[in-house]
Image (cartoon, rainbow, N blue to C red):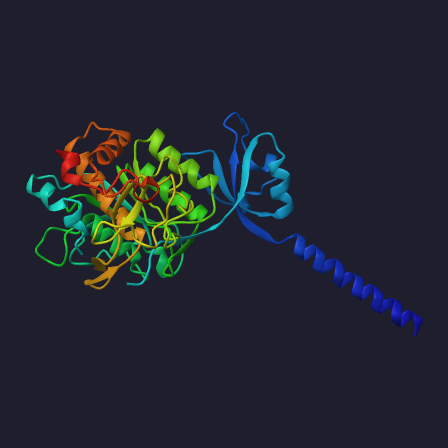
Length: 373
């Protein structure tokens, strides 16, 4: 009997140790940024196996890797590693619920021939329905590698297609017209059919925009959490590659409009943060507030394109942001030599005063025709 109990003890210990070992081996996705001065030639010198590396960034010295918590902690202590950041969730900014184009003076700009012709505009979102009668999508990319979400032109959520219509729906006597109907539209899919994604996916989407020469990117997405990885690629896009990065401020505002509730990446200086207003040029109750807000645009009851040749009205700073991205395309087409910073300054200087609270409205309501002319 004693031997029997001893055997049970050994078996129990084995399973206990095995369970501990398995727990220690659990891996999660991390973003590892290396110091620019690092002169390593292989990741194995950091103890990172090649099969653990899921993606190598080219615009910044960074990789996406599957690591144990212990390995991540070890890498953080390495002087050749800038930071190790756990992959975080990112979501589309939308609420369930078409006057906005008129409010931002887009028809006036169109009458003057300012339509964003030839400017590359990327919608970093849930994909775009390429078959929609009111959209002309020239190309795209998806960070997903399997299932329907691997197709950048499949938009199971409808969010990206709606955003794309506000920015660049065709002037074709069908449906709606976008702020920049002649812009070259691209679908960069970083969010799945549920409107969810990750910081690594967003970073990869922005890198694609850099590598493919986009002039303007719209990011109607975000997170309440800071991601240094997203900031690094957005900074690279704006400061190093002269891309106008437009981002929704977020839908975390409260009825009183108090507090700093702007999400990321809109919080970053390299992103042009857009708040939402209603038909009366008043702050939308859901619109995030704070010193990072740069400008405002309509974001309540915005009618735009949805998959299947449909149209629908939605609310959110997601709907406000593409007004500004489209305006950026219009201005860049009118002034090809203007840098992204100059384009931002033109929009801010020409915006309409709608209230003194810059935490709500930034510089004011977007006025694209005034900015161009």
